[in-house]
Length: 232
Length: 232
DNA sequence: GAATGCATGAAACAAATGTTTAAATCAAGT
DNA sequence: ACTTGATTTAAACATTTGTTTCATGCATTC
Image 1 (tube, chains in turn purple, brown, blue, cyan):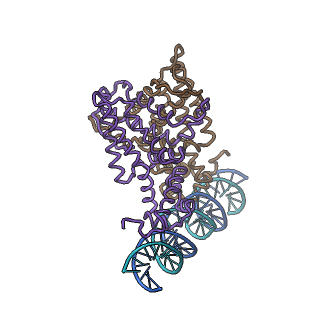
Image 2: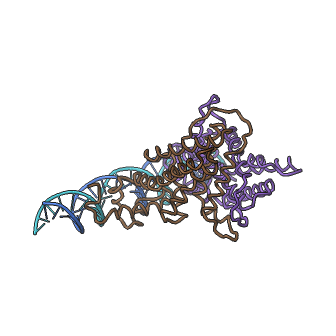
Image 3: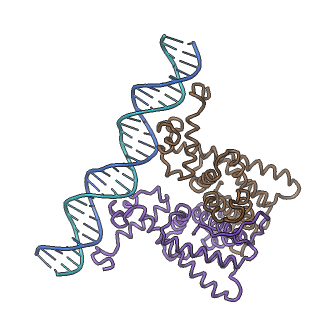
């Protein structure tokens, strides 16, 4: 009774719409894609979107959640793993950052989707949807951010909490920008190895962010710390 | 004859449209703002946009160029200043970064526009318009990026050129994300000083990016270097 | 095999988009 | 005073937007 009892065959159309939507959102952005583009690409009727999802906005929410939740879960899993491994002493910064960033790679590989599309989509989730995420996703994201902030704070006791919050935010910026423009960025590399895989990109981001997080601050009026509103 | 001979009074309407457009673009993004919103806010007729600018796209270009060029010029000026000051020896990383980022602050103050609006607008220029800038702006931006890459390369001879290009790109990400979300970020600071001014934010970005640029890289397959396509 | 109920389809909806037209307005030049 | 030519205006343009309606299809259940 849950669903699919009286179904022509699973959620065939629904899934085709979700897939086409993700493809198009990645390429052109959420606002720029019309329902007609989506349904044409999905070989479905325009009304199908409102039937299955209620509205365009709800469709967007569902696509976003569908791709964001696995990333969040994987982050939590890796953070668990890290804390277990480093029960004695603190978890190193690069391990935390890895747990924060690698899930994009992992989930991408599992989903079997094209790397460029997946990256662009995730980048857009962060840059175009960062504020208006569905409540469910917001709560999960907040838990992750809170946890990462705490662990970073342990790993970097010398960095004030407020400064740390800002720096974590800068890490978001690095990730968001890199995901969005990974395709353009790859043209930077015309060397022997040709196309640096995402593992390389990942490592470069981690190196950079680690350096940024640990950086000495050129003394300025300090404030008491707070919790960032940003969630990715 | 150039323009304004037979003008009701300068480019009054044109300027009102430019101003309203910038305000709205900053708040809601380029795609989401309609010509009607702009002309309503500017107390002008819808046709005035196409009359003065040709099309919406050309209006966007003009607003972007109008705000971007002063930033580029100021960057060049500060880089000149830095090179003069450090004729003996290399220009330190933080000075280069300062020349790269401070112009946003400077131009903002000169323009007298609200900080939040100016930041958001600049952020959107980078995140939503990074690729489709008008050719004129592209050329100028390329010169700036090339120059900064060169100077950073001198200041950081240990960092491979390709890695450096990626890291400079990460700096773009930090800037873009911070500008876009400066208002949300400020809520992080609930300390005594209340609202950290942009000078503080600037210093935090510089510290972070400096740390990132200088970071040691955890050995990975190296490639030969290239030139980033990104311009801001 | 008729009835039930979910899923699809074609068509129409009002509203909003960027752009164009052609008449009106206005300041300056002769 | 009349012409000139740039500017502004209201109205209409054709498209496109998200959404809704209602008839149809089809599988399952009684």
